[in-house]
Image (cartoon, rainbow, N blue to C red; front, side):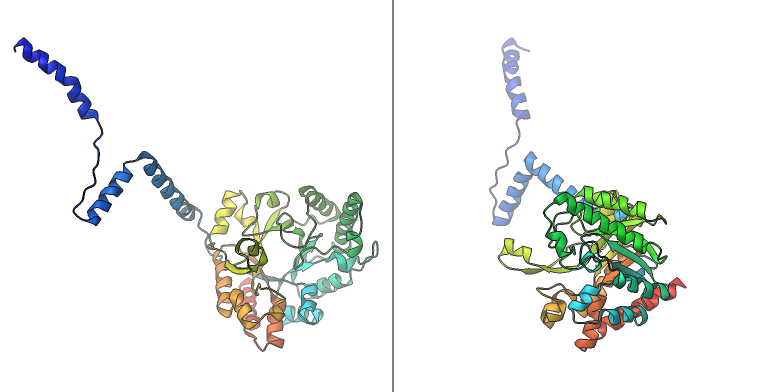
Length: 389
């Protein structure tokens, strides 16, 4: 090969290599808008940052599906249906609380109860105790072989959540207030521990969830109360603490007790939305029934240690349920919602479920000519009792 030709080729080689390694530039000039849009999309996808965002988004979307496939719950073959009963709530609805309780036991046939030792009822005056109401409830349940979860503490079921007596609120010394609180818990357990139908103690109700008109409850307070209950109860019954099923952290609550109780709500009304939207709104939780088991795994709470002690089965609106309009009640607990909620809870896989709202069902039946909820629940409890035989 002639020298001048070899020299010429030698000079051209680096340029050719540089041209080969240079990225191809996409020029979007289409014959129509569709082709041009397709070209622009292709150009966009060539950017690394866009590819990373797309991959990350797909992983985020696929994550709950993967968790569902791994941890999806199996609907419980048999559910132990129970109710939470509140004498205070019964009276607020205008019902005779004793008559309501007996009808829940005898007409509905409930065999699993969550009862409440309300501090303001038991110790209305400092150091003067009256356990007559809660003892009457325990006696009637025991006569009918109904077992009980007994709730003690300062924050317990029903609005306004905290039920400390007035004299306690009037105290200025925080250390003395803690002493009085602990003394109430201890005296209650000592007084009631010999009822063998008490199967479990509940200490406080959603103590770490910011809801209700309450002075904050610390982790130390709850731990102290749990220790007091353990020492006072000679029968070593398990202890449960309730947390919010939807908004609670779970693991912190469960780590203090033996079991975790949770609430289970589908449709709510609450005026804290006013801070965001300027008015109160109704809201449905966007949670599938299987999310509770996945949350249990993610928070390292054994699923068989979870029970539902507050399954929504009554309305949640801007006032007492007996004062709501039919339209307001139907927004959160229509007849269709009632069925859907019971089915939803059963599909969650949790086998111990205490329903919330039996007092209102009776009010609807006797004061609003609407026996649907009462008779539907009666069939539910009859089926539960039949399966237990």
